[in-house]
Image 1 (cartoon, rainbow, N blue to C red):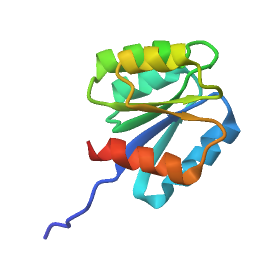
Image 2 (cartoon, rainbow, N blue to C red):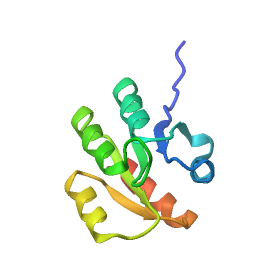
Image 3 (cartoon, rainbow, N blue to C red):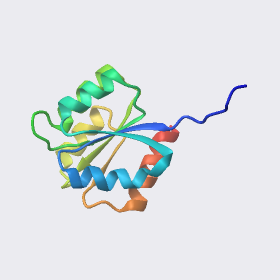
Length: 125
């Protein structure tokens, strides 16, 4: 007898601020399998070693920032959806992220409904 088990979407939240990681994790609830990274290097390693459907990736982090991590993640697993997180809306960062394949971006502080909508749309595609 086999069980029809719906697999959960796997999400990686990468931000150097614990409060941001915790706040974003609350948006997902039990319907997602959530992992964490604190910098771009950890995010790249996690994506390389695991199946990940979606990465929420902060732009400004120590060791390796989000733009550089995005570039590497897209080389490793091009189909992984990446949503950039930023504390300010810099057109340069937004344009660079878009060119490198980011699905979208969200601005801190987050609006829960807006973030959930962007995440749901990304995971449908």
